[in-house]
Length: 251
Image (tube, rainbow, N blue to C red; front, side):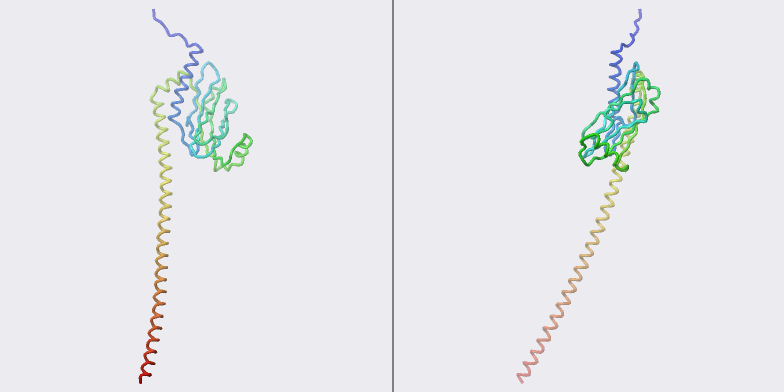
């Protein structure tokens, strides 16, 4: 008599979701976004894997890749659907912060319409409390604030597992890596261009300095020779006068 697989019990269902979330975390690491201040993982999409109508948690990892403190703030287009903890705060150099994003039950269908925005800025002073951080965000010029947007998607455990096993997932990660590499190459090229301009300007200044030193040397040489000729003429005149007087006395 053939045997059929038994339906998943709630504990096994929960374990399956946790395994998929762990797998998604590895995938997110491969598609992380490297910004000027923060490395954001995942970098493109927040995937919410839901089961049995329970509240689902997704983790957004922010890593400070600079030598100074960076403040962050996470905003969403649908604050009534999500709980974000912590939604803002400072990050010390080299430190990673896990932002837990909870999707409330009953909103899975509209998830693809939602967006998240990660704001970041450099902080030059110590932030002691949330009030000081809020004041910094209010006074910060818009040009100093970096922005990165993420979209959302909702997957069932079966769909998430299927997506993980398909080549499209690998292709998406590869495309993301190519985009990041292209951005890095562009940044390096821009920096190299600025260095070339600075070097060219330095060479022009050096040439101008050499010409000025050469001109100064010529002027000093001319002045020395002019002074020497005058002295020679004076000595010759005195010698001739003395010789004339000696000749007169001898006569």
